[in-house]
Length: 329
Ligand SMILES: C=C1C[C@]23C[C@@]1(O)CC[C@H]2[C@@]12CC[C@H](O)[C@@](C)(C(=O)O1)[C@H]2[C@@H]3C(=O)O
Ligand SMILES: O=C(O)CCC(=O)C(=O)O
Ligand SMILES: [Fe+2]
Image: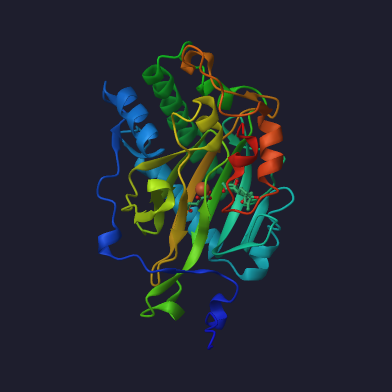
């Protein structure tokens, strides 16, 4: 048997079938955040896909562009300069190709950063450049407001009181928020071979909610039908995309589904994405909200705190079903 190796340039990085026009997911739910029907639409999309696109969000284009321009400048530096901003683990900073500590690899480089209240944590000295930090802080303040509005709309649509029952978990003192800037360089070595390098392997996000924005380069895919089909999300640099995370799945006792997603590298164009991850304080109990449990209905999950879940999640591989070990048998 002849075993074909990856081309050396993508050695150790899993390959995926290159997406084509037929994989495009034209039916991505779009939520107009300024409309009175937003709460209903968000609940509907969170139940059906755990994923939706948000428009009319009120974040200025300049805020997104400035952050993107600074990020592009950061990643354009010499490798030795970027490496000085690393490693990504522990606790935060620049990383390349290695995702997490359990052997996952992707065709990307990134900054993994801690957020305190509405801006980069002072404890996180990366990035050092004042202009990049200022641009990221302006962006983080804005995107966090979008996350809060979405979580408030979820509470409204689910009929949960008070209005900040979910959003307070990401805004209260000690909430565990992260910010990630991903850069997927093009991978021309694979052009025309019908396959593409994995940018970020399939996974669900462990937190409550993730809010993503990318430059106009495609690559994000979500899984439909429990992973039986992968579809490509058409990129939109003016919109945000929201992922329901594992913790929100548990808080809704499985009514909302955390979305399995991944990124496929483009052979010709760089993708730059920003993702805000809203997580609760480590001591927060993650269990179905009582209002969402029907008469006699029990939690599908064993009780745990966010700290316990995060610790367990960070011991798993990217594609593992992290919630499985917390499901009641
Ligand atoms: C392989 C891993 C990377 C990850 C930690 C983990 O062990 C499993 C969860 C991964 C993930 C996915 C969403 C976010 O990008 C992330 C920052 C997170 O909170 O969980 C990453 C983790 C990471 O890159 O360290
Ligand atoms: O970079 C992207 O577009 C998505 C990355 C992602 O899913 C993640 O960082 O968790
Ligand atoms: Fe993700």
